Image (cartoon, rainbow, N blue to C red; front, side, top):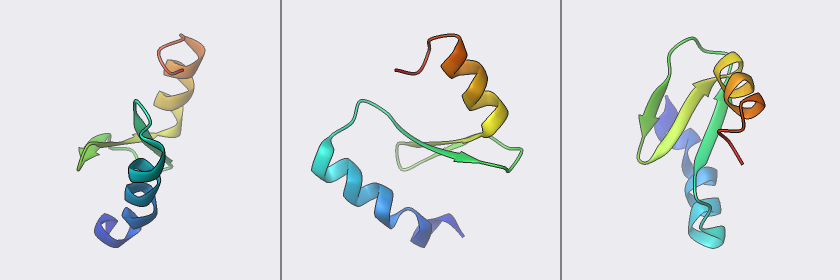
Length: 54
């Protein structure tokens, strides 16, 4: 499922070279695919609020 869905993120990473690539999702499971963090939105919001995501 995520293989084709990662194509735009891969292109973004190649062009802009961000320190971290994150896809925020409504899914429950957190995972890392090809160096891209896929995280549920509650986890993302907690890390953002804690200053762990810049």
